[in-house]
Image (cartoon, rainbow, N blue to C red; front, side):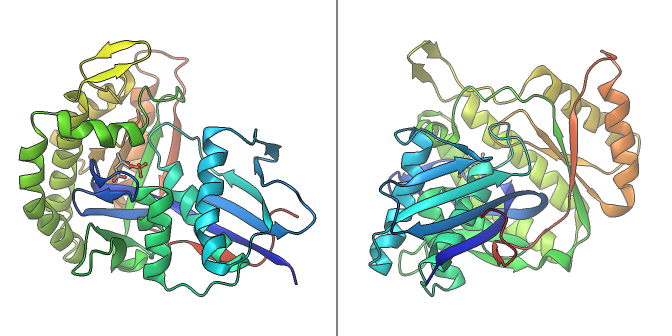
Length: 345
Ligand code: PMV
């Protein structure tokens, strides 16, 4: 019997961010978070268990990764969790491919670990519920738990039984919003989100942020359910700045020296953020959010999509004719699922 499966999973964009962990090893967050799955930022992963292979192998874009690398160790540690559950100790051959750039503020670890979880559990014949898959994906990468259910999701930091997983708030077709992701730079971010989570508590503003989040979560959740775009957009933009304020005020000691905080955005990101404020005052209803990277995610309703893209392209060439940003349009999407036509043999 072939123990093999392929899964596809979306990255997700948080409207209320996960930033800070209560338990580092279990990736338990300090707060609930709310996100949507992105239709055009996906990972496809094939996992095959093989009796003839002596070592686990990981291929990224068909190139084998060194076995001791940090990323491959994290991947195989995650597979071990499911191998132990299934009682199957065969070595794994993993092929994975992203449809978007990594390390630039689009959650590649979310799509990556969601696809890995769904493909591995299926290849091993485990029958896990959506909640179990979400909890399992969380152990690989926190925000990956939100890439399991379909559409708009909320990650419950801890339920009555101390479980932590994501649930659906609304299906993808609930609301016709667009997320125009502008990749202003492919330069890798200065601090990983894993390190950022640990440092967050050192910010003098972290406690205030945590206190403000229950109300914000209610506001964003209701705005999604009521399709109240203005409230949703304003709260989402305020939240992005709240999260970045924490990152910018959490001091970091690295091998290269001391930094007073992490600046995930770049001058181009800021130029776009300021442009969004101008577009709004000109009557175009668009809001921004940024994750732990320089990419700016512009949120608008479908009817305004062309206008938003035109506005971005106009800014792109304004200060430097040769400037080239990647623009990716995303719609709310379904969560991780098994695909039958194998991407890799
Ligand atoms: O799951 P991680 O460790 O990559 O953390 C994600 C952190 C943010 O993208 C900044 C916020 C979020 O909730 O996705």
